[in-house]
View 1 (cartoon, protein in one colour):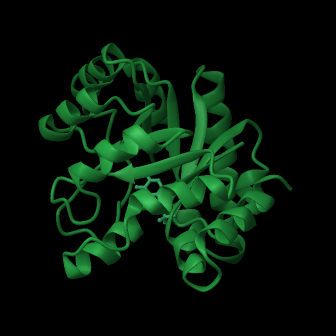
View 2: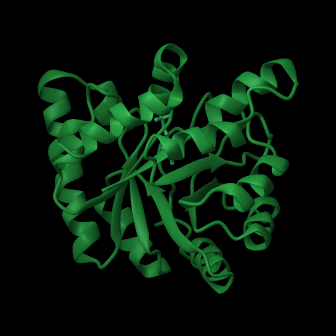
View 3: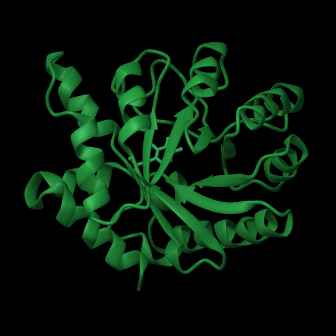
Amino acid sequence: MELGVNIDHVATVRQARMTNEPDPVTAAALAQLGGADGITVHLREDRRHIQDRDLLILRQTVTCKLNMELACNEDVLGIACKVVPDQATVVPERRQEITTEGGLDVAGNIQKFSDAVKRLHDAGIVVSLFLDPVAEQIDAAQQCGADAVEIHTGRYANASGEAQLKELETIRTIGKQIVDCGMKLHAGHGLTYTNVLPIVHIPNMRELNIGHSIISRAIYVGLVQAVKDMKALLEK
Ligand code: PXP
């Protein structure tokens, strides 16, 4: 199981002052020292955290998997095809949102996502689609030729007790569907040191992308240690 460390929040702190620190490039190097299998960055249309310059330097310096999150729009698709990250995770984007809310509606936009997947494939990029755990969306992802699906774990993360167990069961069922469809199973969003283990134990889970919880802990213990702590949970 691979841990992708999302370093957007490092760039958020930098952009709060529009200065040059902390640098997500340094954060990526430290995350790798801590055992990250991947570095994940979201180049948003409004460039609120990660900048084009970050992506370009990360492409040259990251030695593990570079996973670029991007919306399905011309601007960032063009950049992805030029920079060629190892993996592109296509996500929905709304300007006013605090963070990514919900998965893509691939089922309602098959042609659009098939074209985007083909374009990224032609550039040599592995493509993952960020989806809610909904059977219809998984079938649509397969139709579009996606290599992987990242299940949106936000509802699981926000729930508790019985409701959380129900969300977990849904993710498990949809996870099996993803694997049966021949796609790789990824998950992310809202995962923390305290809620990640049941997700780790889902059969065939290949990659988790985690940002906020790791960067929050890093403020107290440093990024290398924070990544090590999360890796230890994934290896349990
Ligand atoms: N996966 C995707 C597709 C995301 O958009 C995000 C948030 O940027 C994450 C994972 C990480 O979420 P969190 O910061 O809550 O760990």
